[in-house]
Length: 329
Ligand code: FCA
Image: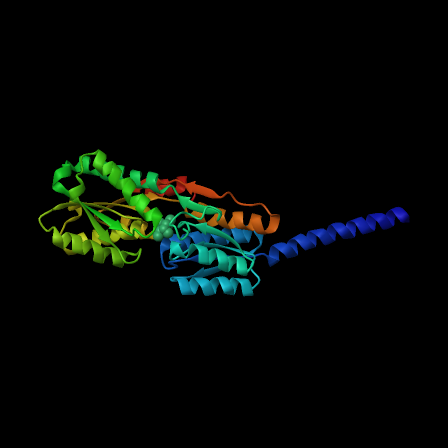
């Protein structure tokens, strides 16, 4: 009888602990805030974060925050709903210390993705776990792809203009374009043939406006290359070239991203000046960050402080294969 009783109690305890874990997982709520929710890259990040939520049984709260005000109220909102942590790609990295303080005030764990927070001194806030891309390396891959295509077309560096679509307030953007420039220069490109096109926002429209100014100021140049922090930036330069009458074979644009913005371009029946993109992984940036945050909240396992992911060049004819290889099909 006594034995039976012990067994029953043990059984009940086991059931109890299983239900407790299940209830806890259900109660886990994680925010995923992005600066540009309409951009396909961020849509993909959310899609893969959702996959992690489904697998682990936590609630994912997706919020778009295009400016600092929206971001701060989003964090308060997550706190009020009883979330335990969030991942953010901020609209402005200089909000770093404010974001850290807001997260702490709401008792929320904080991780960043894509764009790393900086302090008042402009240095990265290294205590906040971050997943970003290997910006310089990926920029170099862009530069190499441009140089290879120039060779294939028989272009000489001195007859070509380069549009550096820039967003210099964001360190990862600077690293990306400077990576590309270092390869162009190593292959004979002169600094005076590289023109800065500062965009007001990291989208195609802003890039188009910025690139148009450069093209109009240098109407004598007929062969162009372009690069920027993402596919949208380069698509802006490519559209600008088209609008001033430069044909597809007079432009070599190579982007970074590989989400729908690039894919839709590759799917067009005729090739445009958007020659390629270095595909980065929204799966790692969405699924893995969400999983790492879940592990932090539910299992007290602290994420690595810095993870940098790589990219792979893709063009019109092989992008499907490259995406499959990255597990993002
Ligand atoms: C930045 C860019 C995005 C994407 C991401 C990895 O946030 O704005 O387009 O390239 O880095």
